[in-house]
Image (cartoon, rainbow, N blue to C red; front, side, top):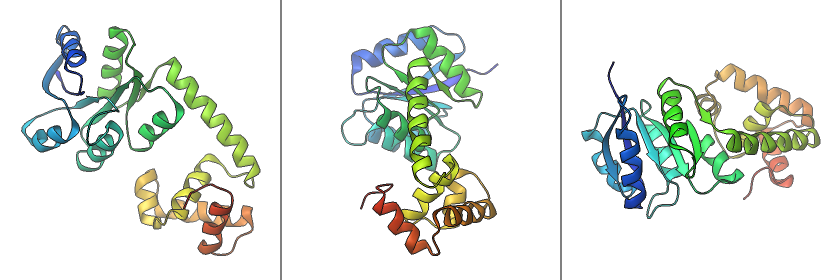
Length: 214
């Protein structure tokens, strides 16, 4: 069985060295590269064969969320795990939105990180109990907000936000991994529930109700 090839990106060398030592103690994992910032990785990424990038969020230049977004767009075969001291809703949801496959606190036990690597390598997402609870609370609040927004479903709210931000149906379909026809269906449902007639009215509704910011 071939090893899982991992790249580390963190601006703290001492932490990076400890992480590398931990991963190299596992016979299934190979650390093929390490970088102190995202831009250096991007310059050299074509030199590596890797399945997973483990990155911090706070780094000079490009942060970990921006790096995740770049990798998800340009290298769909590379999966990203964010390992951060920032455990709050905004960072977690932003990471999920740009395609992170796992989000973990830096103070987790080594065996949990190894487990996350295995899960992500198999094409699954991994969020531990702490992060999952934060996500769940956010979804519950979102559901409550949806009720105030004409009983929109979670998916309809996602489509509403993307339409209001100027994305075309094809772009929305690609981003949400659904068909263009499904996007049209969601838009029609949104218009019906909110009693709106045009996309312009939908955008005004989103701005007026602080669903998007100008």
